Image 1 (cartoon, chains in turn yellow, blue, green, brown):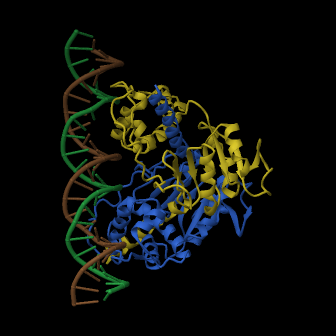
Image 2 (spheres, rainbow over the protein chains, first blue to last red; image 1 turned 180 degrees about the horizontal axis):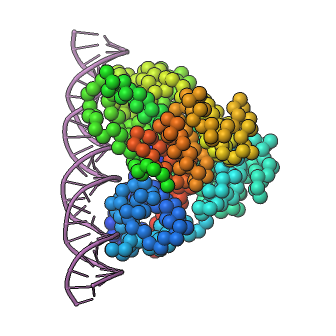
Length: 243
Length: 243
DNA sequence: CACGATTTGTGCATAGCTTCACAAACGCCT
DNA sequence: AGGCGTTTGTGAAGCTATGCACAAATCGTG
């Protein structure tokens, strides 16, 4: 497996810096609930839509509708940022966008390396949504010599042995793993060794990483299986009620 | 937007059939906590790995390690299934696999329609992970006449106007939306009208759907933004402690 | 300037999830 | 048979997140 203890990499979990106080401190260092952090990007997306549609201000009610949550949640989340809405009016859209982008650290563009240029890797490399939301794909990496050298847009696929140099040269902050599962741990280890501390893992496996490294997993089959459960449950319930 | 009230489509939420009792009933109809349902697929993946490596039984401790969670969680989750582990020994791997697959409704293969055959759609169409985990891509749909007719593997891209017939003919249970955001709501409406009640949405937007329809959202940019937050936070903390 | 309509910010209750800790159950060995 | 080490299943405690409900603040208008 790996030289690291398994600290439970994954989205559902995540005690974040358990030693620190949740309240007070400079607003910069205040601990934010994970659930809130996960929703801020959704608000941000909604706010950008609203801004595009010419809204200057937005009420928690309206923002909640646009983001698919309840208004109380919005208010509580935003109050965590020490945000300045004005009572009777709502939130200033552009101000709120700035605030959220600041908290999420999106004021500087972050460079992403994509490791594994197969099916999914290709798709992500060509996905415009990254660039438009504050990220730049700064490197494409693979282990297959046949793929190395291939050009995609203005990037050339490089070999994984050049990972460390590439990470340094391109100031890579985030590694996206789109390799088969059996290669993923090795890739993660190398990324971490190269100094990367944020990993988005599409491989269907659990990565063991040392503390301080943040992993988020996206597993498409798992999503489908969860849907399958509800689908299945509907059928059972239907049978249950009709008898 | 849509004719439906926004019920808060999204992963973090989801009150599931609030009216029903959580306990007793036939074990088939017992309500399962959402958090548990979300983890069952992870256990399943780990169990398949273990089975492949020749393990006959597994302790909650070992399974927890393989799935990246704590052992108490595993035990509680599995006890929800009324699962039969044996004390002093652990869980029978193949039995547990069967049990979980049964609960998730994976005993029958489910057919998936993929709407939006762009970058990401192509990648998913070619992704072997679906087939190997109980799903079959039964239809490829697009709105662009230039893409309609294109062949991918043994499937031909069909026009969205044929969606309803295709859903019926191919017994589609799940719709996967990989269109641009502005088309997603329309696609969702059509899917629902055609009888689909489970949607996996890759478009960066909130879908409004009527009650009884299950939506799961996967937004890659959001995952990156959450990572960005932690990255940013690390820097702030470093500055905070060094002064 | 006062009033009414609106909307935020938040204390509090509730619900849901996680973790601990331990008794009960099991297999194995003597 | 009995004792020992192991491991499950679960009650209870603690923690996090959600949602309600309302006081405080703000704007517009007469």
